[in-house]
Image (cartoon, rainbow, N blue to C red; front, side):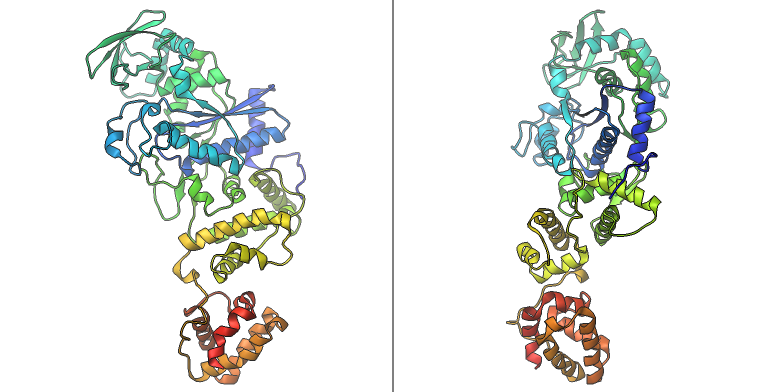
Length: 526
């Protein structure tokens, strides 16, 4: 099992050490993440969440206290209706309103923002992520940041100067670092007319032409724009670490400007790194919530166990682009994880350097801490075959497994469910099969192939007396004795068993199915 090392071997531990070194010793380190719930929260968004969780865990493993905050930016403007949302006409009428004031057109949640937030919140504990949630709409509507908004107004010239450093067209001199949601329309189609130098701000609603003066101490509709809002929260929450995508980390992007603007609010920019985008295998380009064409965490958990979801991210450096696969690569990913698990528990010998690296990846992949004993392992390909042999009955599959203990069943049942989902939803056609029923008309096979198949009947009757190697030899001997090519007999056997020209490795397949399932299918050729 894993041993502690003086030198960090995993990227999360390296970054954790950098945070401690750059931010100094603290009672509590604050790690932050967040997103605008403008649409379905997809697996690309999850990369930031899990990256922060892995750093949080690494800091805790280093003996530090950590606060992991996750901000829902649900007071951002609703700018575009995703393609996958129902009742698009109603949603289009809500454009330019804050997301929290847009209705959930499915009628399940109190508003559109909550409809995108709650499903993720419910799922994150399954993958070992338990942040402290902050709802920015609630804070802004309660004038929680009134003092910070006034600070931004007092230093508007300095903020404008910082933003202009990275703009091709400078902001006008009368620019104000605030936006206002009209109390007449709830939309941000407004123009700030004046600020009195203290707590009052006057704006005009561009849709109705009406003017209104607001008290910043009680107003619910005044908000800082993103490049002032983000650094303000760094200072307010004393954030020590927050990663961002490469769009934010690009030259002149929001991270560059925010690390200057944060000085206005008396803070310093947190330690950060850039994470790359995620593709879905077979699709190109960046995943986008607003497009509606996304794969979310729920969709990934249909196919991958929670530990393997974590493994995908723990085993990949954040600045490396990678694809979440739903094709045959799924099998390799499960096999790689099982290898990692065997290495951690000492069941597979490798060099010390690889052992240290794989062991730390395995530790960080676990939802909780690793178990004392290695979990029950069954090769994913074999499991997929068992599921098809038993027509998707997972309880039958588990009952067929030798030496499976009661305390091992819960995790294995989850793997069975994922494997069954993959076979049903994504496996290529030549991977799928179903065992023929004896009630069906037996396929026509004739000549030497029929003779060879008939000669296998005594072998199948005594199937328990053969191991896989002996059974394979018996199949080749049957073909040789009948005067047919082994590949012809294989083709005939697959037709008899599954009605296809090819299938799983034949001897193993027959052994796995067992005498009771196989013998009735060969009886017509006696």
